[in-house]
Length: 227
Image (cartoon, rainbow, N blue to C red; front, side, top):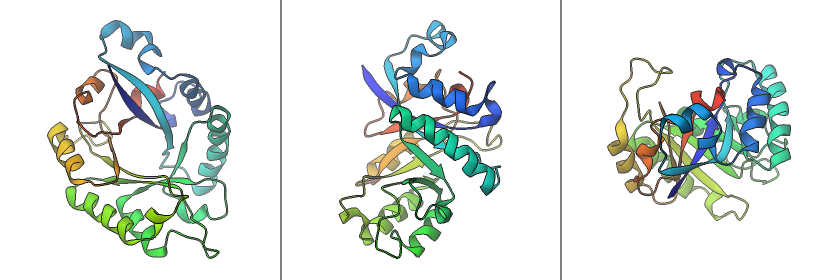
């Protein structure tokens, strides 16, 4: 039985209770197929679904409110040793304890131009994720990282990309999903980046990825925010 890792992407507007309580429930579980009775009753799973990390997205929040929420969610994740990725606000994290960042492609280009190190020569982030939507973007991310010194840094742990949207999703209602074949093609092109699938992925279709070779995991929002 294959293990599929899940990066939980937050959206507090989907939560019946507070996001803090939802994340607390997520990090206490390791096997998501049993986290909600509706999922396990409706489908026989051929894979185990395990938590990889939390991505605190919340794009609509002001910087001030985002960091208030970040502090709360960080406390929950740290208590269980679960990795937490900050979304977008890389320029405000210099000198702070948050060392994992996820960036839209355009923001990654901006970040890379400014450099991966602070003025003291310290590595800003030990894990960097980038949202990509084309083969060209994936190859550019790899090329930028290769040309930097970051891959030689013993403190750098991982670079990854999220590829999508794989299926149609309510987040992008008029955009057709790129599909599994596109995802597999992207995976075949990368040399060192981890690849996560994103977009329209639910507990009901996650088994579609069971035979995707080289896939690090998937990103999921709606089902996990409603547990």
